[in-house]
Amino acid sequence: MAVNQLVDAQDTLHPVIMVKSTPAVILKFTPSMLLDLDNTLTLGVELPLNSRWSVQQEIGWGNSQFNLWGDDSLYPHKNNWRFRTQLRYFIFKSTTHQGGWYLAAEYFRKEVFIRQVHAFGRDCNPITGTCAYFQEGILRTRRRVSAIHGKLGYQWILPDNRISLDLYMGGLSQTYR
Image (cartoon, rainbow, N blue to C red; front, top):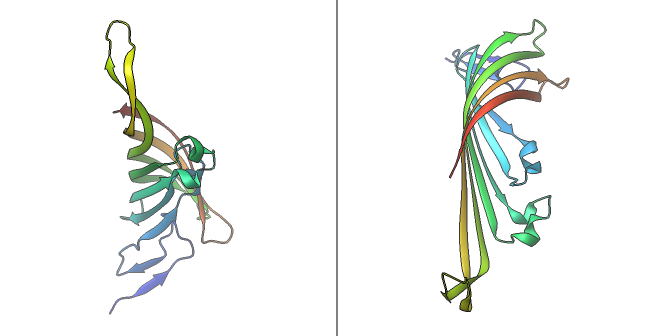
């Protein structure tokens, strides 16, 4: 028979339900990614491994049609997605259980796909750069970003005990392709 223990907040500091001392999966929503230039609707899960460690996975998808920065007129057929895996270690938890400091390492990946009508020069002179004619066609471009981040952060539990706010800063090692 499993014994359930209820705890008040949905964050890594206080897992919601413990069944036989196994932490429950925590569902996450990242609204700040909607403000990014390559905005995405980002959802994630976090699994507390024990009282100090947790692993988190986020995935997001975006389209130029719901971009807040007017990107839909410039790139009407733009799609992008992002992927983030993070490992956290809580170095200090407050005695009031309202927050805690953590260190994190994460891998981040973003892909941006754009499909647009483009004019391609045909029979071009390599010396002068002039072309005999131009042909319209579909140009597909892809931008890929990969990064590894190190973070120091603090996680607060808001007064309603069901939402937490996570603020962090850190450095990165980034590669573009």
